[in-house]
Structures are given as C-alpha cells and as structure tokens.
Image (cartoon, rainbow, N blue to C red; front, side, top):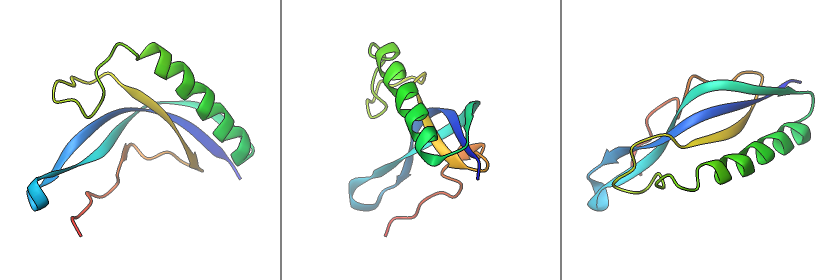
Length: 94
C-alpha cells in the first residue's frame, strides 16, 4: 500500500441554523508533502510536519476565531490518493 501526506489550508464553514448555528472544518489541498510505504511512517511524517506548522503559525489567529482570515495549514495522511478538498460531502446536522 501507499500512503500520502498532504498539506491542506484549513478553514471553517457554516453548517446551518440548527441548535443556534454550527460550523464544520474544511480544507483545500495545497500540495503533496511525501509518499510513505507504511502507515506508521506516514503518520510520523505528518506529526513532524504538524509540529513545525504549529511553530510557524503560532502568530496566526485560530481557525475558530471570528477574525480568522486564512493561512493556517495542516498535514493529513491518506491511503492511495488525497482528495482535492475535505469533507468530500457537506455534513448534515443529525
């Protein structure tokens, strides 16, 4: 199997008015960072990338801030291929 570590720019989207309003996390693919032969290696690479990103982004506003204006990124592991964005389908309030 092949595992991919992908870099996404993250954001929040408005989900709906239910229960006073709710939001969900979204992401747009920026680039592929690495290919790994095992899941463990991919998770290790993503964790390392996310530690570096947290240091580099420490002065940016958090995604859940009303003043967030973009620019935060995260590394995510996928098997075989990374989708161009997540979630692939808009979630529904249950």
